[in-house]
Structures are given as structure tokens and as C-alpha cells.
Length: 358
Image (cartoon, rainbow, N blue to C red; front, side, top):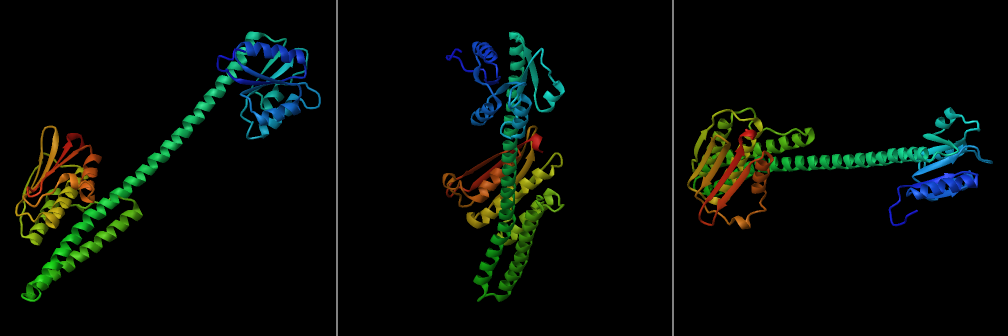
């Protein structure tokens, strides 16, 4: 055997005739196979357990333990049952082909050996074994990939629920907090107005509770929530604008110019971006002017949300969950989100979606 070349396969020959062992071993080693030889079934079984070969050439008529018995034991063992076994038989011997295949043999060769025939039969079985190994590896990779996809789907669903909780519940709680703070400030000097703000706060508290219940329902049912609840996008945005006006005293300018109705997914994302943007404005911006615009172009859908408030340093606000949620929602539909802001210079949010998402 040429040891400078990699082995073409590990073959075990089991035959009680030394001349057969020498002939087959020489033949196979010259062709690049790694060959081991034993003269009886018991030794073969021990060697196979210690180092399973890629293929076994097994003589049928051996004393003490026949080739049939050796094959049956190997096929009964999960660790060795996949090893292909080619039986060896002499032309003048009684060879039960049906029994040979019944006990697990895959092929047979006869003495005297024809070199080309032996090599072809061996290589055929080794090829089948290699293909089986490749198939098993591919199936394992597929299982691993499917598991990874399932894990990613679960993670995405958790992120979606987290975004929905943040967007809907966060929006209500911020408004609730503003109402309560205003009521406290007015309590001594104007109890009637304070009472009105507390009444509004109670309504917002009910909405927050409903948002919690909806999120719990989503988690249980694993169904994406629809914040529009059957409303047209324009109606849902108008409600957000009125709530913002009622809470802050600032009435946003709103321009929606759509050439066609939008799909539910894009409607939900647009609504959530505007909702989160308005929430951030009255939490942090102290803006006196706010504008919202949605329009379609020949190749995209464009949403802009702008205010003249405090602004912030973009580089210092990359980890906020609200901005992160906006980016994730936009990216999930193949869009791009751009946020420009500076301290004292307000904030400008642009979300652009390809026509294919609309």
C-alpha cells in the first residue's frame, strides 16, 4: 500500500484460508485500501468491536462460527449493523443466496477471484456507504438548521410582543403620568380642573390595563395583535393626534397622501412608529411644533415625523428600546429608518419602505 496517499477505505477480510487472505489483501492494498485480515469469526467480532471497518469481506464456510452467524451478530448490534458485508463463496460450495441476503449481506463474490469484479463490488458498496453518511450528515444539519430557525422565530415573537407592550402600554402610561402630574399641580388652586385631569387619568389607566390584558392574550395565543382594531390608518393616526393634543396642548400637523390602501403589516408599522415618536416627543422633547406626513412615491412609501423640541445626540441614544423597536419594525419589512437630531435642534424621523412592502 502507498502510505503517501490517503486510504480509500478500511476493509476487514475474514477467511479461514491463508491463501485467500494473502491474495485479497495484496489485491486491495495495491489499489489503495487499508486491509486487515483474520481467520475466524470470533476474532473478527472482537476486531470489529474495537475498530469498526468500512466494509467486511466474509467467508461463509468457516469452522466453529459460519459467516452467516457472524453476519447475524453484527446486524443485531446497533454499533455494527450499518457496516456492509460482502460474502465470499467458492464455486463448488453450496451457497444459499437467499439466506445470505436475509441475514444482512449486501453482495457476494466467488472464488477464484476476478480482480476487476471484486474491486467493482467493493467500490459500489463503499460508495453507497459514503452517500449514506453524507445523507445522514445533511439530515443532521437540516435538523440543526430547523432548530435554529425555530429558536429565531421564538426570539422574534418575543421581541414583537416586547415591542407591542412597550408601544401600547408605554404610550398609555406616559400619558397617564402626565395627567396625574398636572392634577397634582392644580389640586390646590383649581380642584375642578384637577378632577377633570384625574378622570382622564382613570380612563388612561383603564386603557393601560386593557393593553396588559391584550399582551397577555397575545402571549397565550401566539397571535400578532392589531393595534388599529379594524380602523383605517388615517382614523387611527387622527386619534393619536387628538390624544397628543389633549395631553400636551400641541396640535400636530398631519398630511397623509396615499395613492392606494396599504396592507395590514405596513399599516401596523406606520402606526407604531408614529405612536412611539409622539410618546417620545411629549416625554422628552417639550416641542411646540410637530408634523406628520405619509406619502407614496413611484418606488417607495415615505413616513416623516418631525418636531422642534429639545433634540438629542444620536450617538448617545442607540440603546433606547423605543428607537430600537422602530428600527426592528422597519427593517422587518425591508425598509430603512433614519433619525436626525441634535441637542436643541429637534428631531426628524424618516421611514422609507419599498413598494413591494406596501
